[in-house]
Length: 233
Image 1 (cartoon, rainbow, N blue to C red):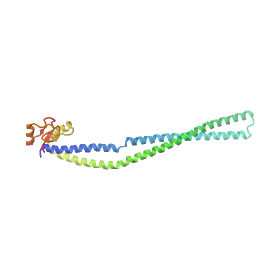
Image 2 (cartoon, rainbow, N blue to C red):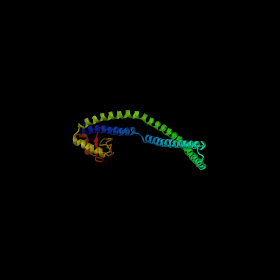
Image 3 (cartoon, rainbow, N blue to C red):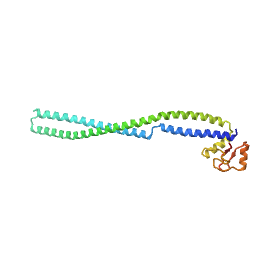
Image 4 (cartoon, rainbow, N blue to C red):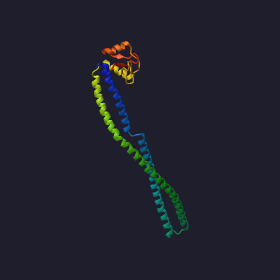
């Protein structure tokens, strides 16, 4: 087998490795949490934050309401107990009770609004959690196939890398340097077969001297136009 043909085999291995590594990168990226999953998690977290705030607000209002109820009850008991006999003290006590009841009425309105807000927040949280669960379940289901594909890809890459190493060992350092340089500058295609007596890389027919080099096979024949290494098969 000529050096050019060995390089052609090496190139096939390298192209396969390029494809496998590209797909492996895609699979690894797909195995990370998607933007959709992250968005669902963020929405659920925000809904939970609002619900926690509304629960705390309602609890605080309920505590304040209980305190006011206690004050009103104590004030009314004192008012009707007969202990207070001074008219001015009785009037002051009545005014205090009226003030407390006004505060209680305002507080009751706030508490009602807080309860409605909490009810809405709890409903939104329930919906966001359900959406998160559904999106994460679909994402996790896709991970099974992706994990299996990643395992296959990594095994194939290992096998191709072994073949790559074995094939490169058959070539000299200068031959490999030329091949690697062409691969970098020719979109991965350093070696091409002849197609109807023309370079398959660029379509230009080789000169007579290049044809002679191809026939002799003792040195690389290169396309005079694109400089790729030619192989006659």
